Image (tube, rainbow, N blue to C red; front, side):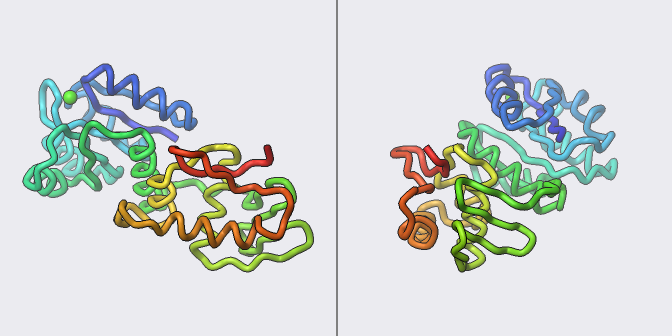
Length: 226
Ligand code: CA
């Protein structure tokens, strides 16, 4: 999946590009507003990450220009400023979301995923069945089993479990989980993630010798068999 990164700061380009490549995205970089318009108007990207401060046009102008050309690609605007005024004018120019620098890569990733999901741009994997050890989750039938034991989950518990099973062994931060399962408008100070992790553990791990859902202190949670 292709992402256009419009940014003239090489440190940020390196940071974002490295992270996105690790997540298997195909990243193209534009360093000026004009370059961004030339590349973006083709409409071949899933998301455009657009810095507000560019050497020629500013991000808002680029955004307005793309929208006036009929480009509907979701745009995530980056800026060092975080005043309400900047946010409002950014969104008015046609951006879909707004993020202030500095930011964590996890947060960027979560926002990109939300944007793609909202536009229905996220490709559904063909195989919607996930397995870790004897735990099986079926995304089509919404059935979960550990060995022969069926496990009944609420929709949120199911979404949480699917999040882990799609990325076995990968540590997911609370923020990432919150944004994936509850959406990015969720209150970041809520402890809902911990509450649901406890509930999920009770259902999928408590009665079984092999524990699958692990806490990684200071980072978040992961699911694996080690
Ligand atoms: Ca810049």
